[in-house]
Length: 518
Image 1 (tube, helix red, strand yellow):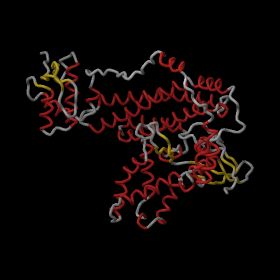
Image 2 (image 1 turned 180 degrees about the vertical axis):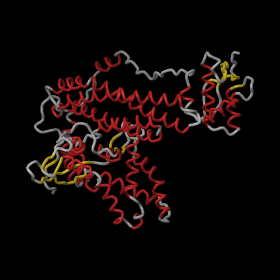
Image 3 (image 1 turned 30 degrees about the vertical axis):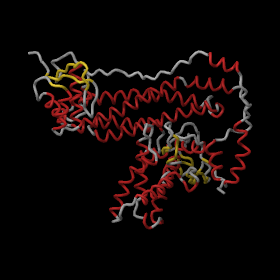
Image 4 (image 1 turned 135 degrees about the vertical axis):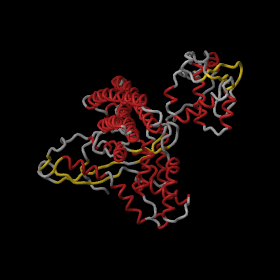
């Protein structure tokens, strides 16, 4: 039995999972409370309570570290804290992407680290031992020892009357979630993201604004590699902010009475719209600064150019997410009205609807098999409902056969055409030596030659795939542009000829040196 301890005052709206208990925990650091530095009682301030909750989030990682000495002898040379940080790194870095991290991805990333720890301890690597260590590591991060419930840590604060109060803080670090592709993936909680990004004392909006301000400052000071890291953090905060808003809309569609659309949600939506307007201005400024840097940076600084281009790509991804979210926010009130109209005449349950995963599935899985089968035998007819036997009907068959043909869904996807004449931005991503090598191969013969032959000679000479890609881009640019004075090569089509190359495909072209005007 757990002691009854007063929970922290929370507001549960938007979080990475639909867990109601996690909803109360995930927003604990964003819960409204006394202003920073305001004394709650003599000798105790609200800042102390916030910092105490921040420290509590590190206790599961500390427990993992202390368990190293109590583990089996063959696993004691592994550093659980370092491995846990690497897991958070890969899970958070892939958050919101198509290839989110699952068990297989974590195993693939951790194997080199585990092998390095084996070599340092003079132990032969063992895949079976690595799997056991990863199981223990993920179990500690997901709280498998407590049926994957949220971590629960107790602490004491002092109120305005000078009385000491006990509180319980519940939070998660990593949890399993279903991916739209059908896979089960690992996702970090809001606390894990903040803990990893060293922003536990900030809410999502402040954390994102801080990360983008750091990107602007680092670009202005020429610290490009660090700006890439900060831009990745800004993208992670962008994903978290989007999930926070979309969770409100999902909860509204499920049960409008469980979301406060009278006071709280309108305030959150208005603040979110204002936050997006500020983010649009800042992100467009970052993109403009990155483009200016790329224009003035010399070609010799290849690594710096790549870093600035990565910052621009990450910022552009954030801008796209915010544009899509802005459309969702503008239609949020319609979501509420539609949900209210749909649910207005629905019978109200006598008690709140259970959460299927936490209140139904997990207790059922923990039951003995005999007890679970007994409950399922009683509940299954209620879930399925009654079905009348189907009787054959000649009239129904004829009506079905005479109905008009259903329109076939479109199978083609509109592809936005690319102006091949404007490929300077793509070419700048490659180092100067790669572009120079590609130009030498294209201008080597001086006469007219097929593109497939030029690519074959370059590959036989040991040219890398990057050089072949630049050659193809230069030929496409020469084929599309009308200004022969700026083209590196000239290219003409060959009727019915197909490009024969293992890397590239399309129509073959006749390539020659650009005919520049005097």
